[in-house]
Length: 337
Image (tube, rainbow, N blue to C red; front, side, top):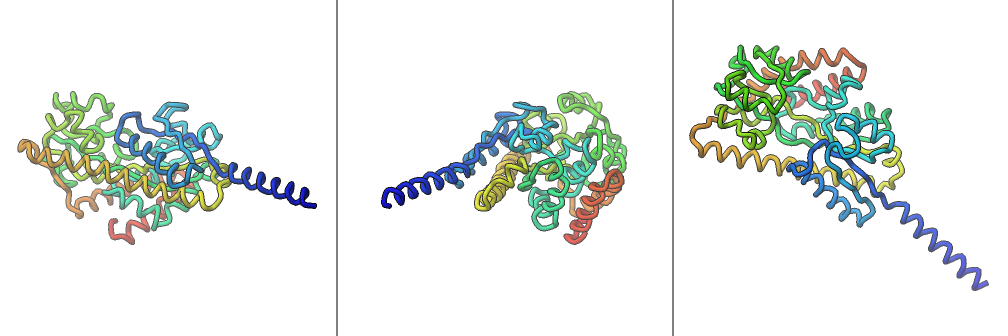
């Protein structure tokens, strides 16, 4: 009898150990950022933090852009289980559904990462995005963002009226359409040609990237009237994973995973903002650069112009219409539209 009880105890213990082992997840995530950038370093820090707070039960291998698939192929790769997850700009998948453009980078909607995260956390954006992503076999865990992109300019631009006739670099799509509607003359140029084009006067301003990155490219040596803080382009940096793997996780690990994404979002916004602010102070001390900061009234004017582009995208799919309705209702509620 005792032997049978001991044997049963051993089996139970082994079963318990096996169950615990099954709750350990080794995940492969790919980023849309390159190795060595500040954003990728923050993502590596998130992976380390997640392993620590989960007691080693969730271990993420963070891979830079292009490691396994191209940057615009990660949605399918995550859904198919080739990757376990990704951290990326959602608008890369606009070709699959215009809704990704509206939810990923609605031009003019946000001025800060906190404003963007507010839509997902408090405005129903998270639930809506999972409605869109789940059919692809992907689960949206949470939203993050860097700072809004600045605009290096050779001429003072203090509001919408000052955009009229300004020849500026703007990528194709919603960004270009919004600036054209505001009266600017957009030019489609690769990022690699922005410095030379500003220097030679081919363009007078550019939709480029964050203030700190623009400065590292030397843009403020030739464009001494940057618009900052940015107001027009602030892409969603989504953290998502394979839905089947997410569904297999126990509730405590799902909670840990969700809270870790909040940690990542806070850290990313803080680190990138600090870099921008350091560069802004340096530019002020230079004396030959004037930073132009738009008033809330002017930003609202631009949003109203950009909303026509949102409307255009909203008519292209049922999901895009849902995003448009949810986003505009939230921005009106917040007094930003």
